[in-house]
Length: 308
Image 1 (cartoon, rainbow, N blue to C red):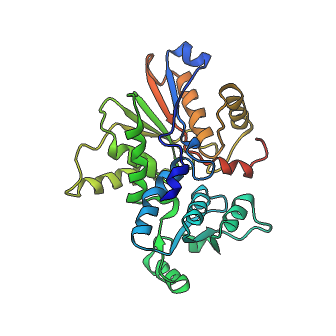
Image 2 (image 1 turned 30 degrees about the horizontal axis):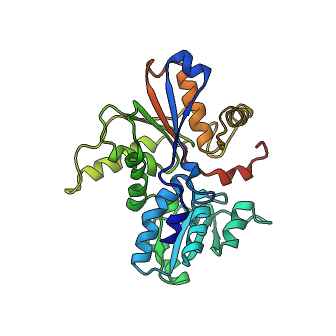
Image 3 (image 1 turned 180 degrees about the horizontal axis):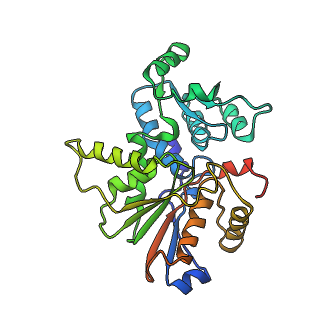
């Protein structure tokens, strides 16, 4: 895969200096996955990596996946497939905007074929009969679930842990589909490290879904039973729901960039860092704690907001 030669791996880890951190005696570092690549950055690349490798091994000529109108996942997939000479199909939730938004325009320019379906139809994205109908329409394809949420996606996300040179008391990440967070839970081998996820949407079922997936994983004979139990999901920082934001969050993101030269965005990483700083203010972490936040990328989504 010659696309690998264009990636910055492993991504760097940046220490953050801030008066609040000094006051509370907390060390905070950011795993800069947004620097992996200008387009296929963050956990989007990590979730695509082994899916793309499998598609090539299977001699698949077409890759199909799902997403919304500002999908970071489809944006990264369209670019990667274009670079690899593989056809791609994106099944988009909702009506086609006119004109296309910047994300969909990029996707189209990179050759991805778009099919817009209703939100009711979209709920069938994991139903075998629905997927069979798509094969009748488009022919054979390699399927990547929405957000890259499959075993290959988790395998790629696990490489974050193997890249770390230091130990941390807390590893924090944003949670959308839960792919990355589940992977960190499954592959964390340090019993002293707690995994803290920040839900970016209203999803009270999220904790149970991840618990169920871990129970199912433990039942597999080839899987170690030493899966971490030191994890928690915080639901207090979704700011009203997926892709919802506030003036306070916008100001935080702009101030963070000014002070630390790190660009955040309001869908994922902005909520993550806001939540971490708010918990530090509330003394959630003991003095002396060492925290790592994983920047999930997705910076192309900023174009959907007017405040950055």
